Image (tube, rainbow, N blue to C red; front, side, top):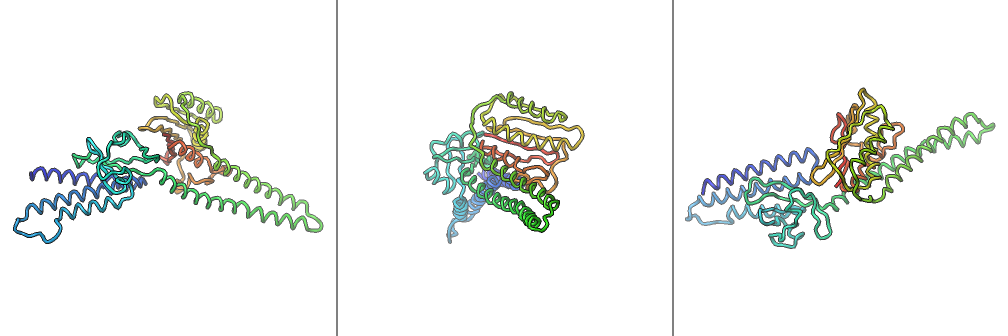
Length: 383
């Protein structure tokens, strides 16, 4: 019996350590949902380990000693439950033959006191990344519970709509800030130049040479502000994608042909990864990938042996398309701003290419990420 308890304690301690390591990795990667789940799992293992130690301590005491309060094991179990119930994210323990709601959020979600019957298919499928339940979409974050033989995994269910709403609110606030900054920067010199032109026109005699000198920059500034407004309209009016199956070989071939005609001196290497077909909006995905390829081509053209790589492969239930180039990489310090609308380091750039590509990917249930800065590598995913 003591040996069994010892092995269980070792398993719980090992599970707690693994959860702590997973939490540290999630923190470094900025995966906050996984970080929260890892902390809760680590706390669960710690509470279970504390409860077992308390039970062992109680078993070692003599029966002659009267109890003066709640048993340590009961205190550990109560602390365990309070900790889990405080978490707003539904947590579910997956056993080999059933699922169990671990906290109040999960019990309310599935309308149960403990067991979840029947087990939703997405929870039972280890490859599933999302769960549809009562009209809402939830992201499934799994952590294997190797320290507990009775539990195969612990699952946190993240409300995708709520998460998306928060992200949308942050993006809207940032976009408003960018719009105000860009509009003020564009209008200030226009107002100043227009005032100078007015004074030049009112002077007697009229200095036509000075007036022409003023009107030239005024025209260019106004045209730049117009380009900005058109770029914003293009970003804001992206229609909902029309999803249908497309042949990937043909799609990638068309992209390659357009790239070769546009940049004949840059070598484009395409790897299809044996992906035959996928469902997406062809026009929008072409636009998103073209923005990535355009940036890659411009970066690669700055150095010798210019080359761009486009690869395609399946990751679980997602299609991943990666674009890499042989350029000098992302400028240090600018990686945090490259997806910000209208951020650009190019004199003639609009600064919406990457932002638009990410918006298109998100409309397809995926995203665009910078996965390498030197050399530069972007990954676009679709569901």
